[in-house]
Length: 309
Image (cartoon, rainbow, N blue to C red; front, side):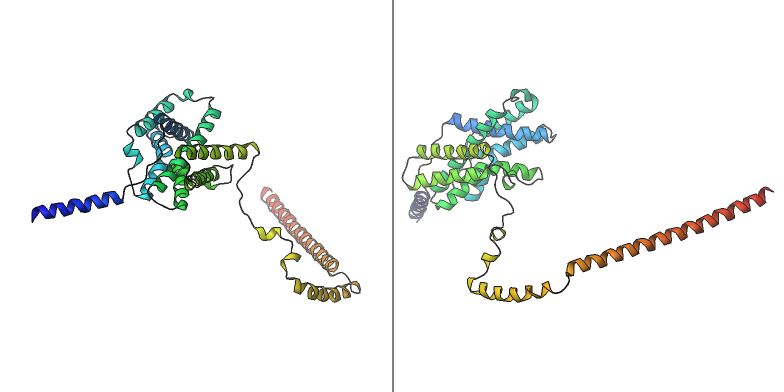
């Protein structure tokens, strides 16, 4: 009975393994992955220096910025391997970058423009890989776009949460999260059209960087406090059937106003009289208080003279 039992367990394990086998995922060159990790780590450690954190805080923020988005994606999907554990060079690269930049910040001084370009490049690359993993494991396109968004900007979001402030991607700013969402959507569309993974990655990065550049060049900001109802004229909000009735009701009410005094002018006159009366009353009280104080001073002076005598 042992042999058939072992054979049955092996068959079940084989069926389970084959059923969970993912589709081939996009292959990114190792040096490009490490560039993305290093650039995101630089962003984290610079934030740590700005917030006056120590070396431990700088390393934690660097790891969060560079690998937090992928970790958030892997924890959400719960399929396949975890990137931070599967790639042996990712975590050491983030820690080494954080240490060097924290101790020698002059390494990245006057490189703001280059870091900004590489940062948005990393966002586009992360968005493509995040969407690709979700699609490779059979999730629907919406989940693919969401995972691309999490992977692209999740690290920065976790960094701001750790610092106790509103995440930058939720605030009014130039396109950043929007660019990541658009890039992930382009990758999902290319995958649905049967295009190659490399073409999808290039298109995702190009769209992400292009939207970011356009928003910065033309200072396009994400909208806040939008209320479209306020943009519609008041008259157009009413139904056409009630326009004639409203006109008939307003016209008779407007005619009697020509025959009676202006109500607003009379109210202003009454308010002015009440204000002047109140001012006179306060002045009279001040004069009385001053007279009483003068009498008290005179009495104190008389008592003092008697004591002197």
